[in-house]
Length: 391
Image (cartoon, rainbow, N blue to C red; front, top):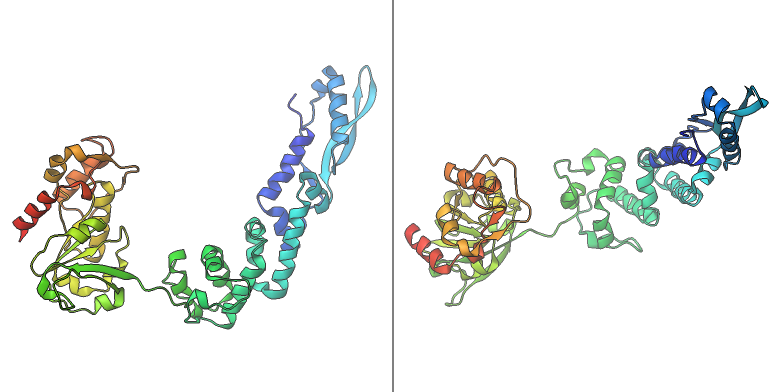
């Protein structure tokens, strides 16, 4: 019979917990209880035809822990007047917590609620909206409050996260909790202490005025006459993005490659340099506007992500050309084909016609399913021959 059982009553209260409503009520003070639960009793016909089963069902409900059962009179043609459940109530929050076994969790939440009221009362609304998230963080909550208070007293501090001087708090802790800290800091800090143009955990430092590790760019000159230092040895140079942007290198051609060995072995090319790429992260190059006056060629894998990276690079430098990412190169190295684990499927509006045709063939698996040719699998003789044709 599909009648409400004690397990169904527990499930209804568990749903209140899972939605955060029970804990939120501890913050807001808005009572959830007494609360009438949904009860599906036997129909009159079922009570008449299945009296023994109904009597057992009544016993189950009456024995349900922490539930108050209201009864009504039912008359049976054989057994006379009987009392059957009409409503089931949970009278108090303590009864609800005991029914679903959440008393200890509620006590932990009450402790962090008290700490928040004492230290950062402006975060009470956040607790009411995200009580289960706060409960997950109960072991770390006091340190999170200390970080928020520290930054409240030192807005836009201009130091590295490593320099936050709070006992028991280190930079790895802050980095691991940047997401929730951002939610809390956005509530507590005044607008002038937040850079709203910086978003996401990767820009946490910028958003709240910490110093961040400088982005670095690694490059090699492919023409000896442009090298920084005297001597004939190879020069593998790394500069912060700001310093790279201020260079006046007098080169006319720039190559960008994603593979480190290709970067290190890239042949000499007159008036050129090669940059070791960074996947989808080209923001570091955006400051170097002098690249706009150079002929820039990007060498990535021949797969859907390789073309997606090329498309993204063109958001910074629209004049970038692809290098060794063509159909002839793909077909020449069929023996080296591999498989792309997860393909890019979206449209790439910045590809030219030839690139788009090859991208579509790869994306739609027209040549072979999930086809990929990694750039390091292209023979170096082919690389040198292509460079000779360019220069």
